Length: 302
Image 1 (cartoon, rainbow, N blue to C red):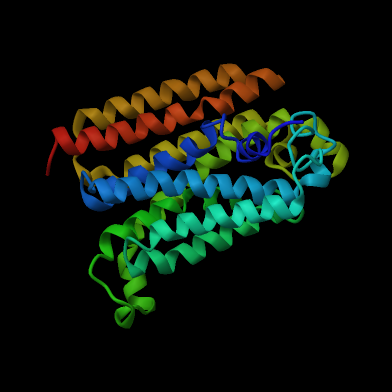
Image 2: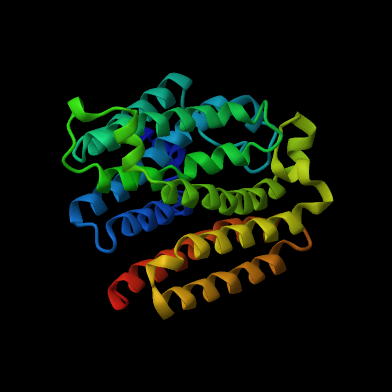
């Protein structure tokens, strides 16, 4: 019999770090932008550990919500909850415990970040059920996977606030329009890579009636993925043009664009293997963008 701890690690996808890396890079990028460079060891540790914990909690929630659908999808049929190796109660308790640990980390920052964390949690809980109602649920996932950006701004800009000072105006001031713009454009990156992911399961999803962007976009899926990447990269370049990040940022964008072209080669024939490989390697694109931002702040200080 398989040990419980091993089943729990499988449930939270511990051996597949690509998922939390896709969450981490935009959050760290937002953290560096909000701080104008190095944000400090404390905030770095909070966001790295918090990202891993919340992604793990999200896996628990998602697998419980999708357990009946996952039985009919080749890639997900052997997930612990789906095959009955881990009960729904166990998965929910594990997810709640991980989310509480992440919330404990947020409590070490400031009240603005704590307040915004409730909005982030609400979107995380909403996504698994959006797949039943929304034709492109990847857009909901895009908000959830991008919410680390406004959280990062709140953690930096809300320093020194107390609960007596918190109202709608102060919460809004902690997260400026630039942060929401970064979230909006980052959403298109999520649309790109999660559409690649959805292309892997398109045949199975059609049979069980699941709604995905790959199904909605149909024969325009590859074209749409390329357009999503372009909007993401162009949008971030536009929003960060006043930051004077110099040649490191230009090199990073060029590297990211080269990866987009590689992804086109991987998904153009719509094979399961090619689309899944493109999805799994997307974290390198996010890492490239973060590298351009972090190195740019070091070498090109304003």
